[in-house]
Image 1: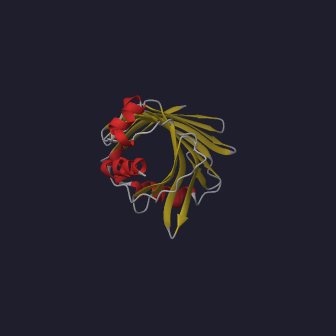
Image 2: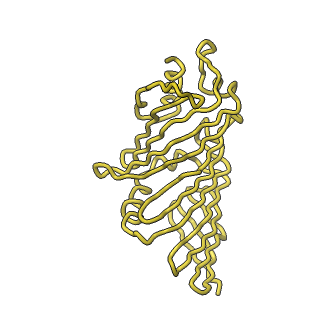
Image 3: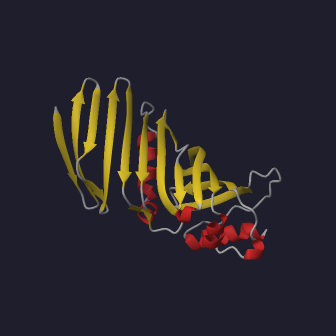
Length: 232
């Protein structure tokens, strides 16, 4: 049996069909949007044992809208995921065009939920101007002093050094051969603070210790931090 569900709020409009089979619910979007950005989704919910997998696809999405309201995601993780040890599933979020930023082109976010834990390992972000891509690994979400903090290792593969240096305005006398950068990214979903730390260039064994970045609030903060690394 196929049934239609409609949800209409100020910032979310969703229409989907769902089909009930034996111990399985199937959802498929018909016409959905959030903050005026259209998206499609498919979801399968297996009842015995409980597990779900879903795919959500945006043709375009403004990244600033997400970072303005991370507390909503924080509350979902703390009050829903962490309180349900039997909640297991996978969410694949694809955004074909990321708006509202200078560096990110598109994203393939892979979210795994298992036994009250959340992981975004193997997620990939392509960079603008064919600069390269970012891959997330060893991700973890922890509650510290009642604040939800995501920390993940990031590997940046640099395919076009010239465009990288141009984007970050690295002076010519400070440029060096650059194949990859490994670093840690920390995102406090409670305070909306974002930090970068422990950068390593070109898988070097000679690890240089850099101070943890200050809270990165915007593009200028990130550009200034990257310039500090090349000036060291």
